Image 1 (cartoon, rainbow, N blue to C red):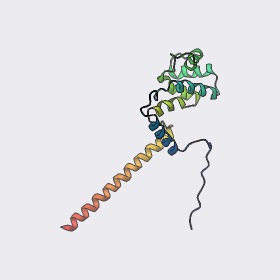
Image 2: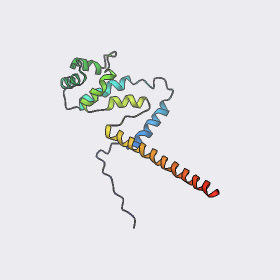
Image 3: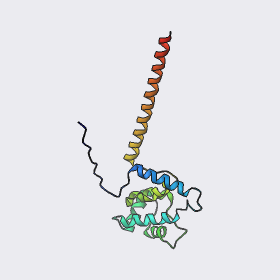
Length: 161
């Protein structure tokens, strides 16, 4: 009797599977390869914090206060406004502030933009550990296969004597 397939409930139907996400990154990388300006992510890096701030339950002054606390540096609402203002081309959020910003607003989109443009992707802690566990499992399986090959070879050599 065959087993009945269980359906996995997906909390968010808009959520891509990891495989689909990797494929889309690969397709995007191929389509943009060598295109002039393809690595210019300035507008995306300006818009992503705007979206993150709008979707955050905290106000801009609260976000600035939390970032100041996490960074040990003075971040004000007006500084944040200059990072996200379309008219302020020379002001962008410093890369060293992005982890604190992402943690406070609860969005990894700015960091995802950086990693995707570099041809990589970032995983949250538990997913990264799962990935690492899988990599170690594959190494162990490969090592076990090599051990079996060598044992077989050893038996063949001993039988020939």
